[in-house]
Each structure stands twice: as structure tokens, then as C-alpha cells.
Image 1 (spheres, one colour):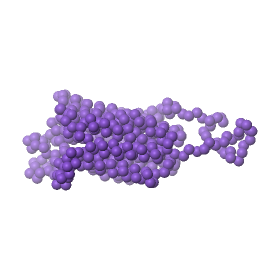
Image 2 (image 1 turned 120 degrees about the vertical axis):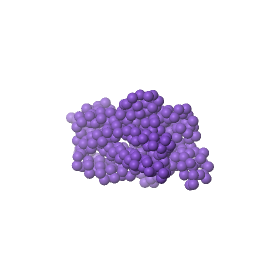
Image 3 (image 1 turned 180 degrees about the vertical axis):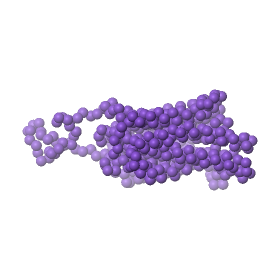
Image 4 (image 1 turned 90 degrees about the horizontal axis):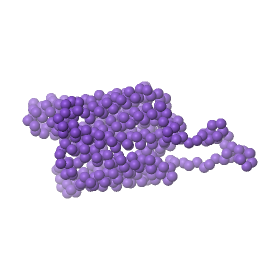
Length: 451
């Protein structure tokens, strides 16, 4: 997409401009994250979510109408403003759940995130520029030639439209403001009435109401470990998610795979199927057997070697490219005349790639879902659950700002300069692996009770 805006003078700078585009979204999301929550406390959860969905729908379609880099930056930033209310969803889930089903319901949030992230990337890759990718089907639609990225945005907006309709007709307000309860003994008469509750519902200590806990008071040693692990993990994932499409589309000579947009979408679509099984079937059994903290550590350990191994696939791509004298080879379906001398290497490349992506999504499900549950477990009370979720969301949003910038800048620098291993095209991936390893070591010192 960035290449088509004529803003990139050197193909090796694509990752930098793509990182700026992603960062604009995260910056605007971080700015508004701390405003949507208080707004929902004043006007309710339902209207806040409906406003966010409406704005997201409009700005996402406008993003699909991008014909210049400036327009893409503006619309993507506006989209980020309305995405800041994602933390409100956690509040809704916490309010409609109880102690018997809260862990399972909270686990649905990362499930939706993983499905959306993987399926969205696959849809974008498969449907981008459809007039040229599928001329027999979409070639006659002039609007798709004028706006080559409109179709994937329209398809993606269908889920937002569905959510908006469900919210309008089915979602009920979950924020219940209870009326003030009379004191046990009134100061004027000193006599309890029939309306006086036998047990005060307000948290008290020595007969006095407990003061509201500040954000700093919630940062216990355990909380610091969990939040630090969340930051490091989200930073590594944000960098990896940003760099994979660029890595896959880059030429093997630059340390990439030489994939087309459609091939990138195909590689990611496999993961979307695996997420359903892992989140709905495998994860509940694993967390019941091993516990939340152990599952989190397993996920971090799994993703550490994934990041380190991914760039080595470029060596196999370079070998295949040399066999076919520099012709573009990564286009499905592969011509039959190449199969005789690159068939084995070509198949091995795809087998190894899909295997690594499955490893990555497995680790993502284990670590990300478990961290959401750990945040709920370490909250001192239900009254502080919203603050804890807001802290986690704000931290994850902030690292999504710097992650794409770091990975995009490092990738452009590493392929533009002839530097030896590990500072070549492997550098970004190795950095992600190190972040995961550090977060895994950090998590070992964490002691969290399971629900």
C-alpha cells in the first residue's frame, strides 16, 4: 500500500513509512484511552461503545479511499481516536460476569483480538488491489481500480457493522449506579431504621470507609512484574507484526521472502483457523491443568525461538531464487516447469513458514490470554479492576506506538547497510527474541494466585 503512494523514493524505505502509518493509529489511541473510560462512567457503557463503533466504521471506510500517503495518515489517525474505547469492553465484560465465569469470559477478549488480527491481515493481503489480482472478477469495476484498497476495508467493516447493529438492538447498559444507602446510625438521631442494611456495603476499616486507592498504590511488586511482562511481550509482538509483511514482501537479496500480497494473505489465513482451536479447546484444558502463570511462561518460551528462527527462511528463498536465475518465484500457483528443480525447496519453505507461524500463534494465545487473566487475579478488588485493565491497555497501546517505528527503522537501516550478522536483516527478529526472553525471565519472579 505504501509503495503505491509514490512517497517512497527507495524501496528499502517502505518499512519506515509503513511504521509511521501504524504509529499514527497507536498514538491517537493512546491519547484517547484515558478519556473514553471516564466518559463511559458518566454517560454509560452502551452509548460510549456505540459512538466508538460508529466512528470506527466511518473512518475505516475513508481509509480504504486513500490515494495519497497524507490521506492515509489522517484517516488512520482518526480511526485510532475511536479505537481508544477498547478498554471499555473489558469493563462491560467484568460487569456482566461473576466469580464463576469471569476467567472464561475474559479469555474471549484475546480470542476476538487474535482472530481479528490474523483474519484481518489475511483479508487485506488477499483482497488488496483486486482489479489486478483478480481481473476476471473485479476488473470491470472502475471504482476498485481507482481505490485499490477499498474492497478489503469494506469487507473488514462488515464486522464493525454487525457489532453496531447488535449493540443498537441487543446490548443493554451494564453500568448500574446504586442509590446512596443510609448510614447504619444517623448522626442526627443515632437510631437505625428498617432501611438501614445490617452489613455496610462500603469497604470499611475500623468503622471508617476506606479511601480510594490511587494508581501508584496498586503497583505492588507482583503488579509491577505482570505489567513489565505485558509491556515487553506487547513490544515484541508489535514489532513482529509490523515487520512480517515487509519481511515477506522484500526481495531475498534484502533478507526477505519475495512474496506477493496474496501469498502473504495465504500464509496468515492458516493461523486464523488455528486460533479457534487453540483458544476454545486447547487453552481451557491447559490452564486448568497447569495454571495461568505457567501457561503464560509457556507462551513466552514458545515465541522466543520463533522470532530467532524466522529470518533464516530468507536463506532458502535466496537458494530458490538463484536456481531460477533471479525470476520472481513466489506466486501461487507455481508454474509446473519450475517444479522439477525447485519443487522440494519451494515446498519446504512453505512448510517451515506455516510451522513457524503456528508456533507463534500458539505462544501468542498462551501468553496474551494468560496475562489478561493475571491482571484480573492481582486486582485487590472489583472496584480496582477497571483501573488495572486501563493500566494494562495504556501500556500495550504505548508500546504499539514505538514498536512499529523501531522495527521499521531498524529494518530499513539493516538492509541499506552491508553489516554482518547479527546486525543484518536478522537484527529486528533477534531483538524481538531477546525481548521475549527477558519477559520470560521477569515472569519467573511473579507469584499470582489462580482463580
